[in-house]
Length: 539
Image (cartoon, rainbow, N blue to C red; front, top):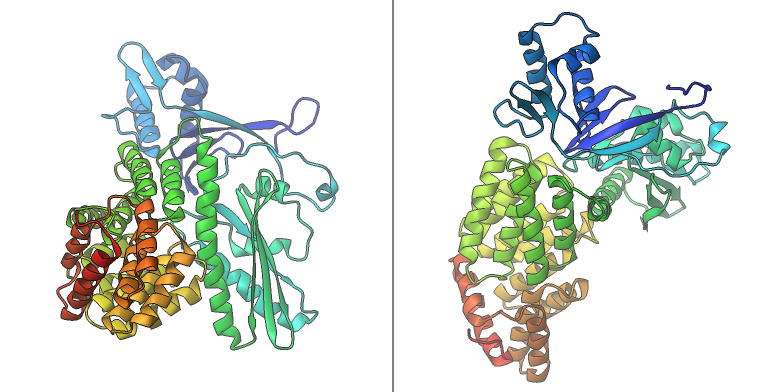
């Protein structure tokens, strides 16, 4: 631990630039949550350049600071500089961060933010009783520790079940792309202890703490959980999960899946709020802001704004996997939700981007979902299903994959199977930000089975879940019109046009490109007629 001359704890500096953190206390370089191995001299070289970024530093400056004045050849200095550049992804040709100025020296030209924090050792139980004030930290994005859940059952024999929930949730949260999860062995050292989450966040260098409890009664199980911001100590999200006692292992899996899916959306929202206050947002800041918008609903406005964030992210970092996958999935969504007059063009873009993403990250579950969706909507539903199944093999909590399999089967003329797949998605993620879309897909499958009354019920459920899914209004209005409820049908269509004023029957007819299955095409024709009756513009 660092101390000031009077023996008190000192302050260490962290330098934040692009996706990197240079921690002067720990003498570590991070890229996101990953610690990058750098030799001591390379670290010193980077630190000196970043610390003196306001000026050009000469070769002699670097030799005096890093090598303490020892004689160093130009070749040795150049080698160390190249290693430093490679560590931060800055090739000698690009020199976007470390510039060489001929006959003058070198300068760090990247945008840097400084963050101070106390250099602390592990917190003792005595220290936990003291007051603390939140100070800004530079913990990695999506960094979280899952504290051991508390067993409130009064039965020590239930500890194995409660610990299993904590263990599996720790494992499953690590599947969230880009997440940094504190290992189970470290987290369990806090079992049974009162914890100050602000101090814990500093100690473990994480942004979030997840804590919870499990209470098992005679015939019911209750789980309470809360997500806490370690910078402020504020609760960001809380949830209660309760259900009848069943098979314990199945229950454990279901609890973990539901929590992991809910936390994925909550963490994106939390990171987006942080990014809004960033002076110089980087690619991931922009990705989180785009995803948070996208999660709010499927409207032309939200889509356009999300596109802007994802495209800016790609411009900053053309090979950022999260930006690529987000942009691919958004293009798929625009086409599938009929927010565009040219869905085929959007699917082509999505297929190209997701294929490139998979060439860089073959095991990215989201990239497989994006590619599968592009295939599904372009008359290759069977190939799409294979991609969705691959995504599930990589991430068992990928609830969206189950729903996509269900809709793909509808496009293949197997609409009777759709509901079961969507119900599985809802079991794993009942409050998913995409649940409204899944419910509408079951409605469309019911239409293909000529079960119009059931279709209306599912379409209504979809709109109740999220009023920002415009195409659902037009489908619902069309069915109601064919039943003869013209006033309600026209009111429903008008509500849809308020969400998407540019929707037309001509745009809907473009959905014929999704499938050439006779049952699907027959539904499309019936819906066209219903939309016309309900007042959807021809276009």
